[in-house]
Image 1 (cartoon, rainbow, N blue to C red):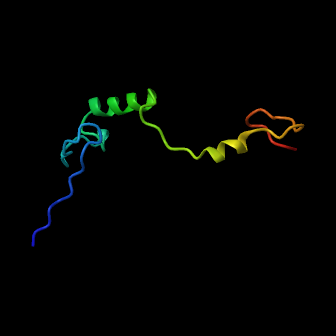
Image 2: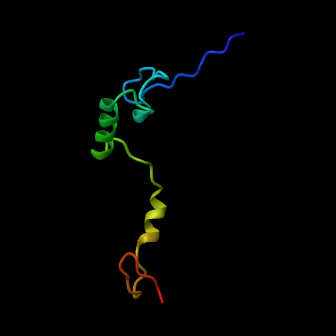
Amino acid sequence: MTSIPFLPRCPTCDLTVSESANKKFMPFCSARCQLIDLGRWLSEENTVPVDREDDNQDQPTPGKPVLPPGWHDA
């Protein structure tokens, strides 16, 4: 029984990424596919799912002062 080596596939174009491909672009096959993926994230075509219940925790409590980011209660 011979084992077939694992060859990852580019998440943008679905081509097989060979071991000799430039490691700088992994897991993508090229700079072009890497930039296409970045563009999808920046245009919000790709998003990370968020549980809306967590958003309510960021709301300030009425009557409690809101400190700027980086400040701590002393």
